[in-house]
Image (cartoon, rainbow, N blue to C red; front, side):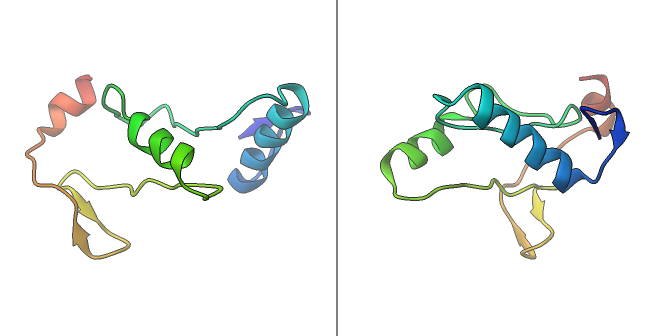
Length: 92
């Protein structure tokens, strides 16, 4: 990730610099969402997290990232069952 000085920085530092830029230049911003270019997301995927943040006293919410089988590898659990054709994901 290159930020500002066109110097490659670590992801965490780059993310923090993006947040800092937003806070300094857009102080009325209520929420910041990080989305990667290689992520496939559904329409209105922000609805549930925004509803949660608007109605709970929590500063942050983090979505679980699943693999192509719907597994949450860090929790050893399966979130949903669905069948994905890798060729279709790549084309999308």
